[in-house]
Length: 125
Image 1 (tube, helix red, strand yellow):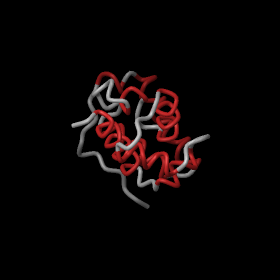
Image 2 (cartoon, rainbow, N blue to C red; image 1 turned 90 degrees about the horizontal axis):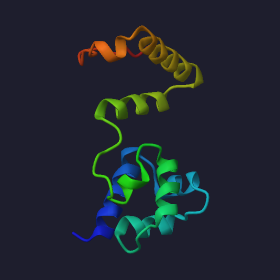
Image 3 (tube, rainbow, N blue to C red; image 1 turned 180 degrees about the vertical axis):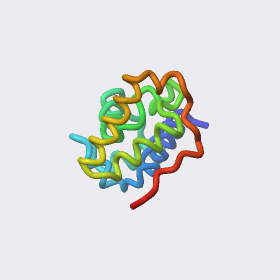
Image 4 (cartoon, helix red, strand yellow; image 1 turned 120 degrees about the vertical axis):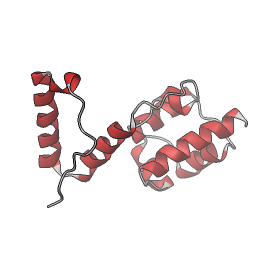
């Protein structure tokens, strides 16, 4: 497959993973129109370094090197992606609570020593 199309597929997948429209993503950037982003996704046009950086900042879940197919490793694991998504769904108070919990876990050394059970569920209230 053509590299430009692969780059476009990565961009589209990252955007759709966050359930963003082209307009939403364009609005998060400083200078990229939705038609320009669409051209990148369709493989019509290849983004440059500056555009890859701007899009990675706007998406917040991928690196410029990942978007440009220079690095095949996804920067976030599935659990990290889940945590980011849950954090985005909560309000300011919830985000602050999540940050304090993570900081407390790291301070206790628990985060690096004991794996968290995958059976752990947070109840929705």
